[in-house]
Length: 356
Image 1 (spheres, rainbow, N blue to C red):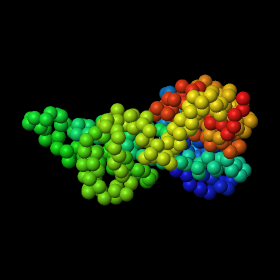
Image 2: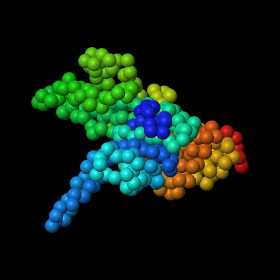
Image 3: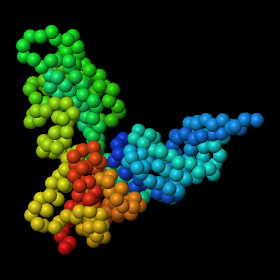
Image 4: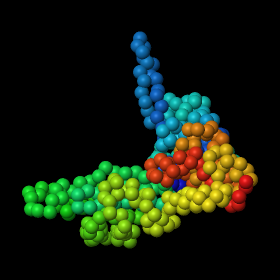
């Protein structure tokens, strides 16, 4: 999440750009009824014509909306904020009209509070431990590239070298030149690059991973400081990326990343289950009871929790847990970790002490 303090009409305001679904979960927890949200959006405007039907045109506008309703859209990759327009940069859009703003990943949104910001809200926005990693699973035939932000994984379609894979001489196509193959991967990396800081992890069978690393750092020397090659995963392409996210190696190379932290929490919960020590809670009901007793050390929830329980109840539970000192993490179904949490009821907690 990118955030920056800006001046607002009522004092302090914060500009936010969500970078992954986890950030949308945080925005859902931060934005309250009565807040002012400023965003670029679109609205249909009617133009009345004499002796004919009115024409309709969708125009881009910037509006300030006083929040009356907020909810995660069914797709979970966008946030719907509805309320009354208080300011508009288009004279054809009058104040007082009702409007809905959709906030998606990459959209800018400014939040103003009617009074002062709560410490919890500021903490949620500032305590970003997501980290971004670019994962490259490569061999002589193909390369899979994934972008892991927090616990959200985005996989780009495989890049193929055109090499036949045969050990005997054959008519190799011109586009099977390894350097052309490597250049395609680098171009993809450059297109993915932005102002955010990220680390690159390269792996795969054989020596292709090291050859690509040498080629990459010789052409783009600035990658050398945050690019590393790892052994132990001998699968390339999209399959290699999925194997990596399930592998214990991920904890070693991403020890401080959000996905590693969440993975450790789930492993500790499973250890408690196997030992028969009930210092854990599974499911909304048990986790709610543990939160009320202030016994939750860490809490992990997945997007499926919103499909099975009332959204506002879930938000209130998460915010209260965070307010009493619990560490709260969101995951989605793009990784194996998110699927594990979903299979455990959509929410799990590691407890400070046994409550049963």
